[in-house]
Length: 205
Image 1 (tube, rainbow, N blue to C red):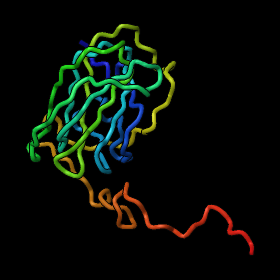
Image 2 (tube, rainbow, N blue to C red):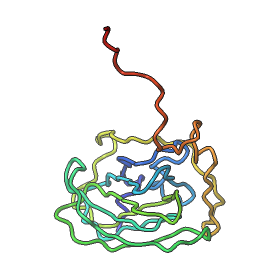
Image 3 (spheres, rainbow, N blue to C red):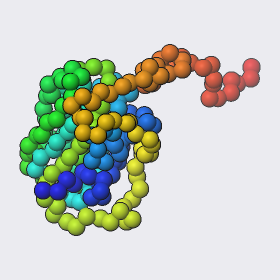
């Protein structure tokens, strides 16, 4: 069955919960295990995919590092608002020895799935990476040509992680120190200290 989440087939990344310009969401659907999306905040994390065509999803497959528990959800609607559970599972911690690769069989859906959401519920470390998401199933409608699809993507393709071709088993994900803390010493998603700015003017006495 064709991969309905592959970029080359017309799928798109609709939304991601963490934004790292060096590791954008599109890396999870580019068919390259050497590129990846990297989380930058607390769990849960989320990746929302717009499939190439409305699909009866049979299985989902994910390649990752430091992910512990995930849930896949499906939405049959034109706008990704209401979701139903597709599959859920827990991953073994590879402890840096290679990628976690897991395939999950999916439950039946109320209608052809247009959007698939990956929820990363917990991890084996503070940060995790997703290298590939595959969604296999039968397309029930013809794929929508790319030029006719609404450009609602939120992440931008940037230079990607370099790896040695064919050396996936020894692949390591480097999280630079500059990504762990922002310039003010906080985590990227942590609350900042108030800057003293006031959005309104104080009334005169």
